[in-house]
Image (cartoon, rainbow, N blue to C red; front, side, top):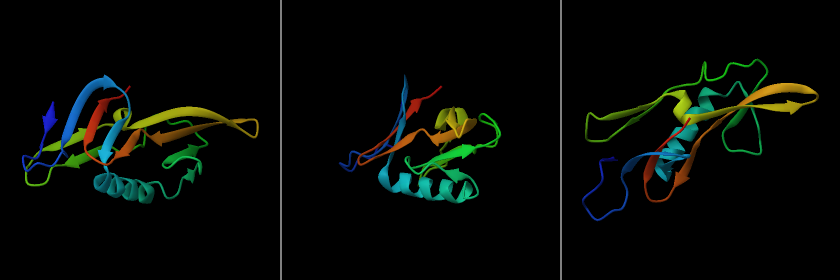
Amino acid sequence: MVFALRNNGNTSGCIVDFRFGNSRVVKPAYEVLLNELQKHFSSSKNLKSLELCYQRHKPEGFNNLPTITFHYKGTQANLVIKPKGSFEVGDKMASNKKHEYFCLAMLSDDKMTSIERHE
């Protein structure tokens, strides 16, 4: 399924792919998304080795993670992605304690946005 594919010769656009994998977001939109999520999670402990991964002491699963909405410029179309479709949640051992972490399951891409099915 393709959304807002430009007909001016550019290769940018958005593809919704029903295979499993990490979504890719065109770089300018990814940078805005990353900046907003960093502000949203500013009180959480960032795992420095990954771009947008945070540690929680209390397991919450996908609770309290934001829904991400892509607004398509020049249209009234919106693509809403619930937390299970945009984040990974897992466990990590640190100092003999089990901590939960969550990471954005999206990557930057130079050419196009590809929203993958993610479970």
